[in-house]
Image (cartoon, rainbow, N blue to C red):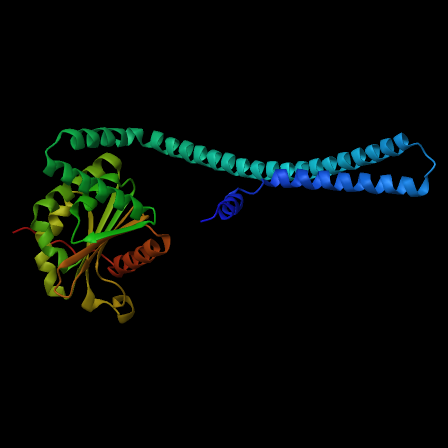
Length: 322
């Protein structure tokens, strides 16, 4: 390759000037051109003037033009700076607003945690940390699963409803221990085997404590298909009446059609605000338990209970013991 070609390529590879250098060169060229024009005009209009005066005038006008250009550039930069500052101020304001929002959320959460301090939340967090750190792997896995299950339940309850497969006796006992005013329950033949189970004993003891310690009024309505089924409830009714539970039995076949229509599944209303329901499957096995505190749903269950309760004009007398 020839030397001329190398020189040409080397010159072509040189980086172009920066934007600032280009703008400076442009300003100088405008200044020189204006100075030259002024000098030519002074020669044409005032040829008799001193040459020094012509040069001074050209330099002064050129300097003025250069200063005007810099002032214009400065004004443009100042405008851009104001725009940048305004944009940064908006961004900063958004950051500050988000920070205050986070602080507000944290304060609200802290307040809620403070309310829960007496409910064992700090102890739960402390114990969970110890279990995860020290327990065997199977226990850590189990603990994580229980925490996740509890978190899912709390999340469901924020929507005032939760459910789980099967019959949840822990929910039943927990709500009974929390009741402060009333417990209204409907019991059908589906849960007849429940009353001979161990959880039923704990459930009745919890109702006894609710009645004696907190003055809770407990009403239970047994629903049977026909009058012959009443005798099967004699011992169960006597046992519950001894606990001061108000018990009635309604016979579906004795009811008018407009009263028979409606749900007849097992449900319990706690304090008139929370409904515990057990839904059977086609094989009459309790397939799902639901908690629901939505006002419309609870009111519907209250109306249904009262309609069936009032359908029994007088409680069916308990059978005399043998």
